[in-house]
Image (cartoon, rainbow, N blue to C red; front, side):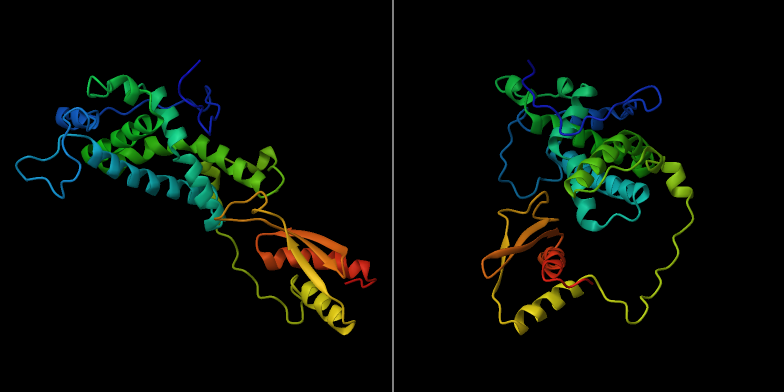
Length: 285
């Protein structure tokens, strides 16, 4: 049994969508530093800044740079694949795509951990660490960026992370209790980029009620009848997260359940429950 935990995302690579080859870093000094863990030289960590004549020889700076490059490329990839995706869900998808478990799995596929230079006494433990495996992948991305700039890194990363982004999009869509997209909707990146720009939004016609109006009408009817309403929220955030919660609420009037609802905000969840409450009161809107 593997001592490494499974990756959160495991997209299926095949002949149509092959796992891309690892681009080579041709500069010996960069390649050596990319694979040098800080334990190898054992330098102290509390130093504010290295001397210009004695820079740190480990890969931490490349790792830091690679993390930033990954964030940029994956964020841009999501904008290209899903141009209408809101920022909250996009942030959740990106976190899945560049999470340590996923990066560690990619790192193992490329056999990067085996190339690390580590302190001999810690080598076995460090090489098996998911965090270290993810770090060396980020370090490789950073080193490749230093040598070849963004044009040398971006095409590889987009080909690599495209299937991971698709898998993460499906996961987060399910968390929001949305139905899966039909196969025809999962179009290729080229088709997405070739699509014409969407039409500008049309102004809402005057007099058209907003969906939140059910809540206002429900509260108005209860106030007229001098009845007591209580909104009881489920523990936690439902299927969502702190970033994009999905609120679940139960509406009780004088101790009797009048409706239930859920939504991306507390107000929208109350509105859904209010719809059911109005029907129970015999008011059709």
